[in-house]
Image (tube, rainbow, N blue to C red; front, side, top):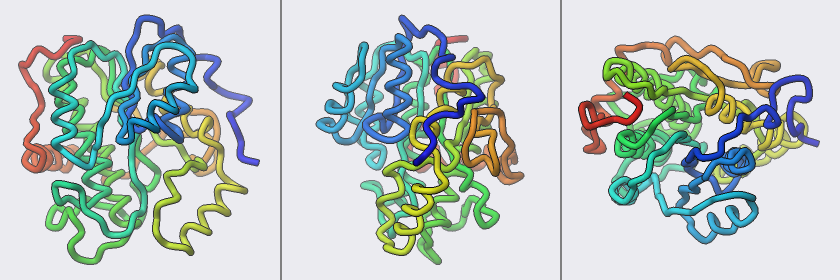
Length: 306
């Protein structure tokens, strides 16, 4: 059976009291997003489930004790992201960019972007900048060890993989983008004099439903076998996110499992590829992302936490 938590290290019993705090979790209706939302609510936080399917979100929230609410958000549709941001008014202590898609057949977002880059990166990029004036503590973005796959890089000449599309390559690019986004967001927050911190986390090898939409029978079977014998469950996979969201860590930190090959184990600070550590690439990606989404860093817009 999949492991639930690392019995020798940090787990959800060590979460601080979050009473009076608000956490917004994207993709909170299932997988590590649901598990993180559940743990935050049990620690006293008011948790907002930001989900594409409101009915599923409500069913998930009904299973969680404490104060929750559900709001519709489709990260693959920038109009939905803008509407979400325009309707938001409350302070956010913890913004957790968790939602994502993985190794899909070729697909496009409503705005015409490659689905994995558009959802995993551009959707969260726009959301974060729209909500940043309300964030008081930190932004945690969920990346993946996949950012290292095949010497992943940002294909600035073909971000939408119109040539040579592979599900793995597109997914790796999107997860690399998550880390570069975190790096540049932290730089901008620091320059703005804000106390808000940007951090990233990855779940290791976690058995969730994220892997069930590849459209490839061989890959699906391979992942099922891996989930059965090697993966930790979604509770273990959520620990790095929760650690990044609640522990006193420096900005731009990257948290993952501390076990073999960062696949499982108690959360700890982990390394990242050289491509994910390049500030020049991070700044270039930020500029391109602003152009693609039409959403800019709200510098001087009264960011809370200054």
